[in-house]
Image (cartoon, rainbow, N blue to C red; front, side, top):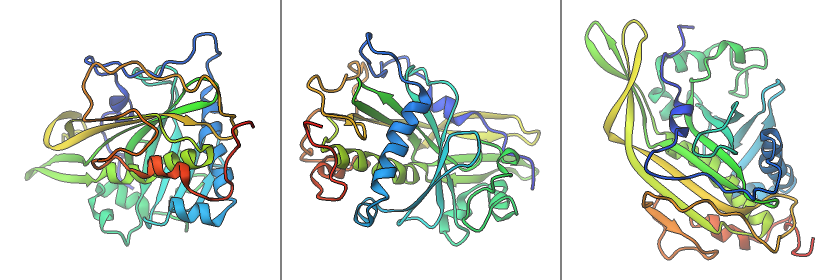
Length: 318
């Protein structure tokens, strides 16, 4: 295996607060702030432990299987019906500046060699994926994670924010295309061009729809921003820097007011985030689907609250 990709920390870069807007989820000051591990258990394991008990729910959400990492790090591997590869949701230390109380997760995608997208990953990622570091499930072996650079296979970030005692918000950050250029003897060439947003949505959609369905509570506020994207340039000596990329866009998508698994419907509702100073490309503050939802906003985030599936979620007086 060749040396790991030398790139900027994409997770921290995407999570960095923009000077022109305020994004942090506001949690009631008289409530203790939840531990990030508790948030992860509540929103991810709490959801999937209920969903995966019902084949119809799995089918509706497009899920095949989920596996908890057997290592100390909190991470989950997810297989969907729409992709041959596997997704990883891994808890990172600390919180992003935009959501100082949120639990930050890295999203990675391990492509199947039979997929066309496999060729769009960097050579070092392709080599790693075909190496003995991966097992027959298409995911890293339990004893190989320390040999894989954490920047490999990155497609985006997810932040889970507690909003009062009974609700959570989901905040996705991803570029529509993650591009890396390497400098060699023949000059610059593109070595990675991965469609990150489309892959990241395959994680966000079942999370959002699953929470909406189980809680019988659609998101009460959805916002999306589209900004100029970045590309990464790696010199022959490994030095890397990011530059503006006119062919790429960076996306931030927020869903607020989702009812947490196993929590009763609270009379006070969810604590909403502060008003954004930067005008979103899309904003919808209602529990009914919008008349028009531009991609990547998914109307099923609202519609899932009415799906008739088992388990049906908790009653209002639970």
